[in-house]
Image 1 (cartoon, rainbow, N blue to C red):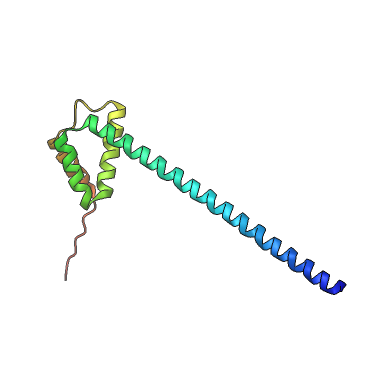
Image 2 (cartoon, rainbow, N blue to C red):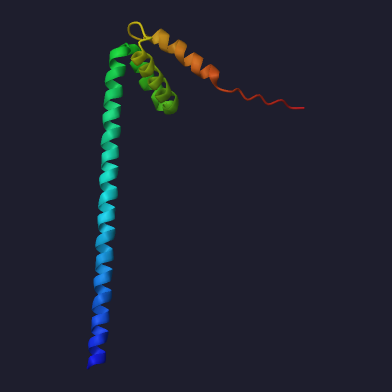
Length: 121
């Protein structure tokens, strides 16, 4: 009978270890989920602040142009938005950014891109 008791005790210990590992894994998953939630909240807060600042420093026509452009070139729009916000925080903007000023800025940034020319021989 003692062999049977030993086997039972070993099996019980294995089950308890498995259960503890499962609980630890579940706790880690909950921590990861909480971190992801915090990151999403921080991103949403940042986007709301960015939208508010852009609303203060841009005319409605310029905001509409950026919104339309964001559908096709989101990276470019993010770069422009950050540049405008930095300019506003530095105090280098005078008044609201108009649609024409935004067009000039877009041309400047688009001109910075490297052109690729292919010549055939």
